[in-house]
Length: 440
Image 1 (cartoon, rainbow, N blue to C red):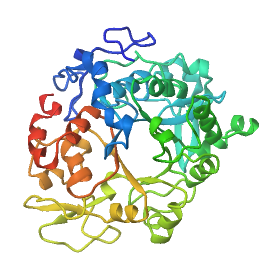
Image 2 (cartoon, rainbow, N blue to C red):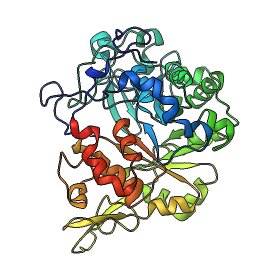
Image 3 (spheres, one colour):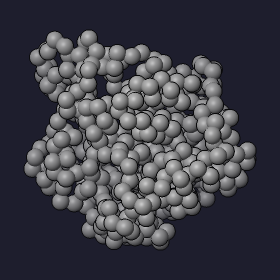
Image 4 (tube, one colour):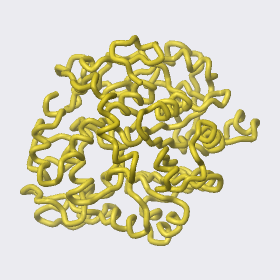
C-alpha cells in the first residue's frame, strides 16, 4: 500500500496527502490556479478502510459502484501503480486498466498502445517513432508493441492532461498488468478489477502475437487465472464477490472470445450517437441498441458501458423540432422523470438506461471528471448552479439518482464520488456545498 513520504521509485512510493491536489475548473495546476490539499485524512485511510467498506465484503456492492478510471487519474499520472494504490485508499469499488502489449507480449496498463503524451518515450526512444492505422485512424507515435518490457520499464509516466497537476511527471513507472493485479490482491478489502482489451483486433494482427499463436484475450485471461481470479465464477456469486471482476471491450469479437473461455461478466463499451462505429463491426450506436441487438448482446454480456451523454437528453422549456440526424429534443440529457430543471429546460432520460435494464443488462457509464470542461453541456441550466457551487457531484446525482439510475460510474476522482454516494438524495444540495471539491 501507499506509504506517505516515500520516494517515487520505491516499490511502495507515493506522494503525501499534503501534496495531492486537483483543479476542478480545469486550470493549469502548475500556474493557472492555486492547488490545495485533497486528502487531509490520507494518513488514516488504511486504518479506516475495513470499517468503511464492510458491506462490500459481506454482500452485494453498493450501487452505483465507483470504478476508478485509470486509477486516481485526476490526481496522479494515470495507469501507474501509485494511481491504483491511491484509488484503493480513497475507497474505489473497482480499479480500471486498459490492457496493451509489449513487443515481447508482456501486458501493460496504458490507455493506448501509443506511449507519446502519457510517458517520456519521446525522450528515451525517439528512433522508435512509427505510424499505424488503428481502427481506421492513422496514428503516429512510439508504441508499446515496438518496445520490450525491459525498455518500457525505463519509461516514466506523465500527466497527459495539461490542465492537471504536472508535478508528478517523471516519478512513476508504467504499470504492468501484474502490478495492477498485485494492488488489487494486496488491498485489505475486496477491490474489484475492470480490465479492458484495448484495440484487440489491431493487437492480434501483430506479427509477434500471431507467431506466438496467442491473442490479447488469451494473455489477459491466463494472467488473471495465474494471479488467483476464479474464471469460473459468474457475476454475483460468492467467489465473484471475493474478487470482483468485469471484462470490457468496444469489440464484440473480443468479448465473445473471452466469454467462450470464462464465466466472468462481459461489458460491451459503446460510443456516441454521432461519429462512432464499433471497431470490429462498423455498427452504429443506433444499430447496437435496436431491440434485436440488445436481446443478442444480453445472451453473453452482463453490462454495457455507454457514454454518459447518450443516457440523457436536453428538453428545452420551449420544445424545438429535432434537427436532422440528432436524437429527438437535443443532445445529452438525464433520467426518467427529470429533475426540477432550470428556466431554460431540464435533462430527461434518453430511454437507453430503461431499455438496457429491460434486457437484464447493467449500465456502467463513462467518464465523470471533476473539471467543468467535461460536464454535460446544459448541467448548469439543469441545476441552476454555477461553479464553484456546480461540480461533478451534480452529474453523479443526475445519472445515479435523480433522472436515471445507472449501476456503475467510471470516475477520475473517487473522493467526490464517494462523498456524493454517502448522502441520500434529500441531502444532496448540502453535500454539494460541503464537498471536498468546494474547498479546492
